[in-house]
Length: 313
Ligand SMILES: C[S@@+](CC[C@H](N)C(=O)[O-])C[C@H]1O[C@@H](n2cnc3c(N)ncnc32)[C@H](O)[C@@H]1O
Image 1 (cartoon, helix red, strand yellow):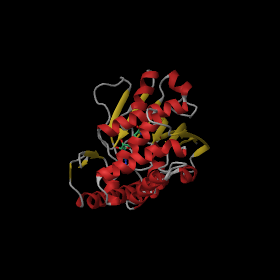
Image 2 (cartoon, helix red, strand yellow):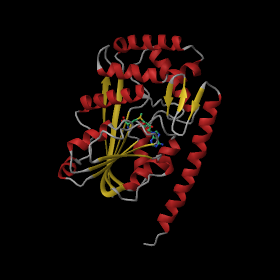
Image 3 (cartoon, rainbow, N blue to C red):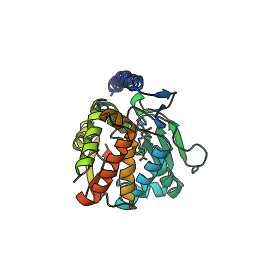
Image 4 (cartoon, rainbow, N blue to C red):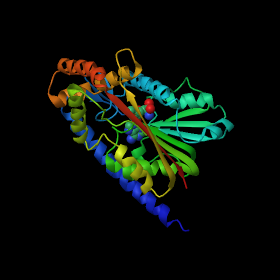
């Protein structure tokens, strides 16, 4: 085969990159124009919280929430991943990529459990540790929407999780999933874990917060739900075999429980944007959260987490 298809892919990647840069620039301009804030190369600051993009804070509170979320995943799934890659990780020389790694908790855990394999985390903001980390773990700043800074077929295992609020459907379909598949080796595994921004059995205050969250994200072109589409996005690449799926419905529970704490922090993370979107004060938003938290036990609210994994052909 000639290099026609790869040239075409490169041209497509350039077009996606240009379009994604235009979109993220215009949404940043729109959102920064209207509220008290400042920004630098990596972050925006708004009402005392630090943000990576239009809707996701990425300050210390957010990193603490993500660490808690990691332990919630571990306790509810009893595993860090579902792909059949454990043997290869243990034997060594297995190359793993975590895309949108945040504080890097998942990657560092795998790195210390598998000292003979190699782990790379990328995030568009430098929120990962730079000094204290296992020697076989490295982090880089990269934006997947600009194309990943790795050659085709580099990694044995490509992992990404909790990015539902970061991409539009078009980005998922045409940039993100194809890019993850591109850097995965033939025979390697790709795994995505997500939790949609829709909780089951929610009471009226929780429902109100969820609906507001959807409207807010929709106003930035983000759907906030990936579950019904992800299988199709993976299938359409025509490079993945045996696409597997598993999910867990996790009760939010009551105060003091891990899921409750994560749920509460998740609602708090959206306070600045959603209170402005609802045109209510931060105190009024806090009251809405208090009511939602009381509803969790009464309505038996549940959060669904799901994983898709497949092998590259
Ligand atoms: C909700 S956090 C999930 C973090 C991590 N996967 C975990 O499980 O803790 C989303 C992360 O994705 C990063 N992110 C968002 N958009 C990105 C992009 N286009 N490219 C790379 N990273 C991105 C954010 O900076 C943030 O750290």
